[in-house]
Image (tube, rainbow, N blue to C red; front, side, top):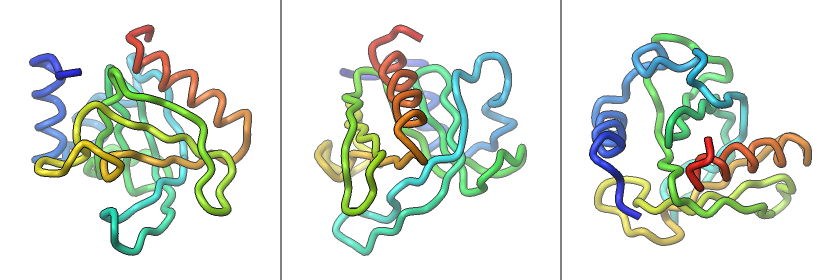
Length: 144
């Protein structure tokens, strides 16, 4: 699924300029869900580490930040395009409550659209996992 013009502009802006939480207008009534999740980090095929990230879902995107709580001036660490993405439960190693996101666009410019573009997010328990899967699934299918 190709991004529409507005989504492509937002995606490219975040990839290139890393705008802040405040600049992205997160934390207001348009923010669908936000909270702390653990994300597998690092470029695929290198050493990967689970790191806590603050996530905020708005529009067709999940934005994530280094800090465990939103800091308005903190630059965005990355973005996940959710529209049309496959959202599913997963287990990765010893992590149980994992959400696998298979987006319809590559994680970074120049990367292949394969498992290197998938995201794995770990929740603290099954209830949190279900809540996030519902929100992410609704955005993916256009039912925000």
